Image (tube, rainbow, N blue to C red; front, side, top):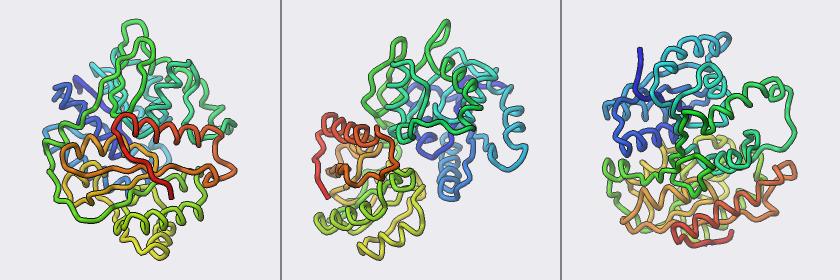
Length: 343
C-alpha cells in the first residue's frame, strides 16, 4: 500500500494542522497515521479528530504504538512499507522518539513539519544552529535512555534537515525564521474558519489553561494564585483546560477560583470557532496566543496574553524557560497586536 503523502501525528493539534496543510496545499491523497498516546484526554480528542478527518475524505490509520510490550517493533514493521512508498512525509512532532525511529528506517524525499505547539519555534532555531534536538523545557542533562538513543536522534536530525534531493518545509502559525534551505509556509487556519463558525460570543471572559505545571516549569501554588487573580480582574467564568492538565490541579483551580472547568473535546481552535466563546480570551504564553487570533479573525474576540513572572518558575525549570516564554509573549504581541496583562 502506498500513499502520495503520509503524516505521523501524536496529538489532536498535530492532526488539525496536518489537515490545514493538506487543504492549503491541495493534497487530498493524504494518509494520517495516528501514533496513539496513552493518556485518556489525548486519545479522546484524537478519536474525534480522526472521525472529522475521515468525514473530510482523508484516510486515517490508528496505530497503538505504545500498547505494551512488542508494540514498538510491531509499529515499525507495519509502517515501514507505507513510509517507503510515501511521496512526502508530514511530521507533527520532530522531537518524538517514535518519529526519530521511523526516520532511521527510511529518509523521505520531501518532508513537512507541522505545528506541535511552541516546540516548532525551538525546532526551527535548533535546526538553524545545528544543535541536537531537545525540547525547550528540558534541562541540559541527558538521562541514560537519551544517551542510548543518541545515534538514532542524530540520524533523525540529519533527515529532518534539508539535504541532497530532500526539501524541508515548516508549516506553522508561529513566527519562525527559515533555517538555511528550509521553506516556511504560514498556516492561516483557512480550513478551520471555513468549516466552523462564526461563533456566538458571550458577554464575559474565558481563561485558557496550560500544562506548564505538569511539565515542571511553573510552581503549582503560584499558578493557581495567578489564575485566581486573572479571573477576578477580568471577570472570567470559564477555564478551558489543557488536555494534559492534572485532574487534582483542575479540582483545586475550580475550588479556589470558582471557575467552571471545561475539558474540550477537540483542539481549542475548533472549540472556540464553534462557540460559544467569551468576548475576551485570556491565555498564558502558549501556542494559542498565535493560533486563536487566526482562527477567530473577524469575530470580535480579543485575545489577551498573561506573562509568566520569573518567581513563578520552579527551581528545577530549565534555565531557558523564562526567556523562551517571554519570547512567545512578545512575538504574539508583535504579530497579532495582542494586549498584555499581569496576574
